[in-house]
Amino acid sequence: MKKALLRCKTCGAEYGAERAPFRCACGEPLDLAWDGAGIDTNERCQSRRYAAFYPFAADEWRSLGEGGTPLVKLEALGQELGLAQLAVKNESANPTWSFKDRGTAACIAHARALGYTKVGTVSSGNMAASVAAYAAAAGMEAFILVKGNVADEKLAPIAIYGPHLLRVAGPYDALYSESLRLGAERGIYFMNSDVPFRVAGSRTIAYEIAEERGFRVPDWVIVPVSAGGNLRGIINGFEDLRRAGLTDRLPRFICAQTARVAPVAAAFAAGAARISRFPGNDTIAHAIDNPFPPSGNRVLAELRRLGGAAMTADEGEIVRAQADLARCGLFGQPASCVPLAVLRRARAAGIVAEGESAVLVMTGSGLKYTAAFAAHRLKWCDCDLAALPEHLR
Ligand SMILES: *Cc1c(COP(=O)(O)O)cnc(C)c1O
Ligand SMILES: [Zn+2]
Image (tube, rainbow, N blue to C red; front, side, top):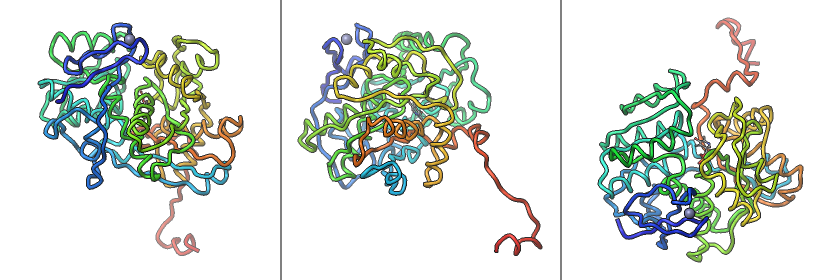
């Protein structure tokens, strides 16, 4: 690994990336500060195509082929919404079917560069599966901590990769900080939701969107937000491209949340400088139900700095968005469809103007949450062979 810095955008403090601090002493998250840039257009996979944007040596990456996901144009839906262009960045095309693989790959490279043989995470869904899979591929021991109330059927798709899987009773926030503390003590690299290299991994979403569009950035990029790491990474990615002279401006960003759990949107609307804990509620968009996100303050500051917005959609709007995307051939889990629901509201409110362009980040696969099928009126027909001709008229 080459010498690189981690910087706190909030207080300006800097740390060496070789020491693995996971948060700033001020309590806010850290970002990779690294000036490298360059695209190897012969490679598809994130860790080879964009390797120059990271301080790692080629043999430090252990890739499963993350990145290189499709940017799918939705012409009819775009027209219906009065947009010049609408596209979906389909992150369900990653190795474990969510964008989390990008950040996991970067964290695994960092952990290997620092000599770790054990990794872990705190998650019950996509991040847990992603870390378990990448640890298996890298031959590392994995410790996956999930909340006490997670159902058995959600554990199997994590357990299949062979990690130490621990279901821990107790408050979720405490689990996050306790994992970082114990990790430092026991030599386990905890690649939680918004640690610096997980966030750095999300930058390649921005690189790919820009490349696919011939380096003309869209007017809007809309991202579902839970911890806030993914949106921070995508913003950093667009800033990298402008710094490298590959693009001439930044898009504007919308933080998309479910109305049931909307700490960033609530603070944004109230003009507050910091987020407050949002009362926990059940939502179909369970992958983004974080009532007190560790990158919430940072996301809020970035949206204000860049002229973005934070908006919500209700449960019915999210279900409709999931159906709308499926009718376009794209099946995302409910959380990953919130950007489309929020776009409809942003158009109605005139925040996104007629004739503009937008990219929706569809963060994970619909097959990750089959319970959502019950929210749709799905139909099929049983018949016998003799009646088939009748049905095929
Ligand atoms: C993790 C996740 C998110 C939220 O990303 P953050 O970086 O926590 O804001 C959104 N959608 C899906 C499907 C996820 O797995
Ligand atoms: Zn700081």
